[in-house]
Amino acid sequence: MVNENAVLTVSKLQIAYEGDRIISDLSFTVKKRDILIILGPNGAGKTTLLRALQNLLPYQGSVSWNAQKISYLPPQEFLQRQNLPPLNIEEFYAFKTSDSNAIKSMIVDVGLDESLLNHQFSELSTGQFQRMLIGWALLDNPDVLILDEPTSGIDIGGEETIYSLLHKFWKNQNLTILLVTHDLNIVWEYATQVICLNKQQMCMGKPDEVLTPEQLKTLYGTGIKFYKHQHR
Amino acid sequence: MTTKILLALILSGTIGAIAGYLGSLMLSKRMALMGGALGHLTLPGVALALLYDFDVSLGATLFLAFGVLIIWLLEQKTRLHLEALTAVVFSASLATAFLFLPKEEIDIALLGDVSQISPLTVLVTVIISMLLFFTVKKIYASMVLASISSDLAQTSGVNLKLNNALYLICIAVTVALGVRIVGGLMTAALLAIPACTAKNISSNLSQYTIISTIAGGLACILGVIAYAISDVPAGPLIIIASALLFLISVFKQQKG
Image (tube, rainbow over all chains, first blue to last red; front, top):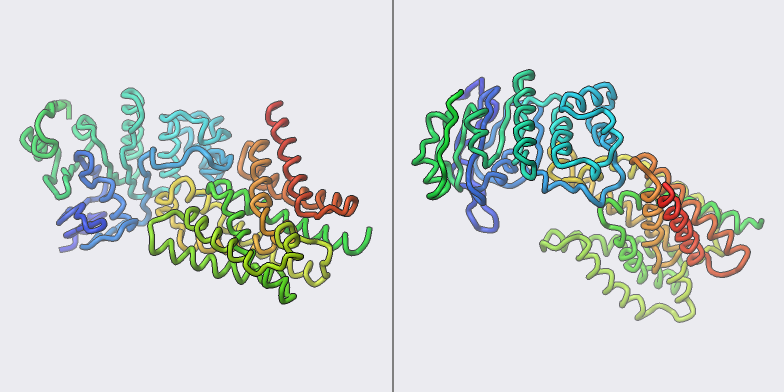
């Protein structure tokens, strides 16, 4: 049965790399305006899953999108920031649009000063760089935004502002978000759906329903502290 | 000024400018030395051209096409970097060239020669350079994006395989043109130095590409003028001129 409200339908997804099974038998659906968080320990196949969903890796099974435009931000440490030509931020944004007013208003919308448009990649702090990337990803009005560890390397204060920024865009635009993170607090605060992944699907559903202490123990092994926000 | 010098100036200036423009992209891909490796790859072709008296760029192109095909095949078969594979293939090629390169032609093959240039050669070079310019312009933004992240480029709709193929072809053709003026040993300098000069003194991408193109063309023109005065081979003089422009950019950068 096709769900018309579905943005993404994944069925029996299997991914192998050089004979090693990385993900097996994964099926899930993402609905419009979901914030789906993919949770799992290191090596669980989270990044691999995001890349396969965008056809960046070979896979078996079916991945079916019902979206006009998908924007993807890889983990920041996978992006080259040094040894580049002297590309400034305005020129980087101009790869997506020639509308200089849209560029200026986006850089302000992500909470950065307009003067940063004249700066080069290497001159931005990690937090500024991530905000700038989020602006870049949203510049061509995608319906789906896919982010992989968007706050890695950013301190706790900066991390909170990155997520509230994403939440602001999610509220104001008709956006569906797929997000990989380690941070359970973010799951409680923002996720509408969560997938627990450890090479295979361990849980899928609303965080309140599926993230039980037992489930987290199975996912991460013993020793994880269980703390649940009560304000949502 | 004799017609021969004028033809050499037009030919070298054009090749220098396109090499500077393309080279600005190669710096970003950390492929600055790739041009040199490909230059060495041309040497068996240059040797054959000198031996059987046909155009050196034609001989260079044939061997480059062969070499690039082998590199491309090895890249598909192995998990080695393009640069590493190029190093394997170019050194084998260089060694092969010395098996049959005539002793009296070694200077021309290694250092280039602009003394015998026909108007037809200039015309063909200018046309090829214009084609190269438009191709590089077309792939430029995509290749810069890919150098930041290939995933980012692909998910933004860049056909990476096609762009990489066009990029390699542009490098190969530029090297084949460059071999005529600076020889098989110094094509890396033709591609790399103008980009380094430009990077020192530019604050954005458009300045950088323009300065790299001008620095490449200017170095070749200055080199050929020095050749006309001194009769030292133009190839080394072009590279020395380019290195001097680079030095100026270093001091200009320190002032800024």
